[in-house]
Each structure stands twice: as C-alpha cells, then as structure tokens.
Image 1 (cartoon, rainbow, N blue to C red):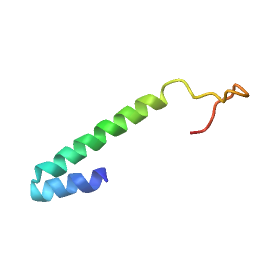
Image 2 (image 1 turned 120 degrees about the vertical axis):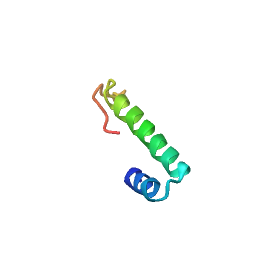
Image 3 (image 1 turned 135 degrees about the vertical axis):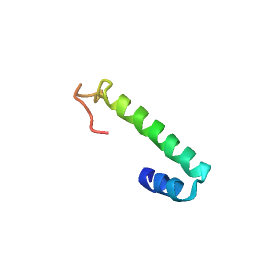
Image 4 (image 1 turned 135 degrees about the horizontal axis):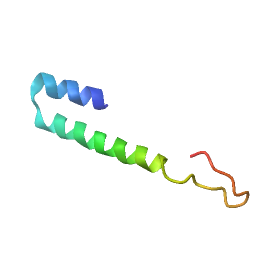
Length: 51
C-alpha cells in the first residue's frame, strides 16, 4: 500500500496520496517500536505468546 500511494503521488502530484503514504509510514513506525517492547506473557504459563 505504501509503495502504491508513493508511486501514485509521484505520477499525479495528488496530495492525498502523499498524506496516505506518510500516515502509513507513521503507523508502521509505531508498530515496529511496539515490537521492541516487552513480549506479552501467557498468564497461565508465564511464557511469551505469539501475537
């Protein structure tokens, strides 16, 4: 989705496509930083749970 919105912005200059690209980038950056946080633990066994 990010690549599509960037290519669309490049070819058309459509500002909404650029804003979509930046929003997607922001969301992806916040997702990757949350992966660096502590893993979620299984309450019954105390082991990491795959999300």
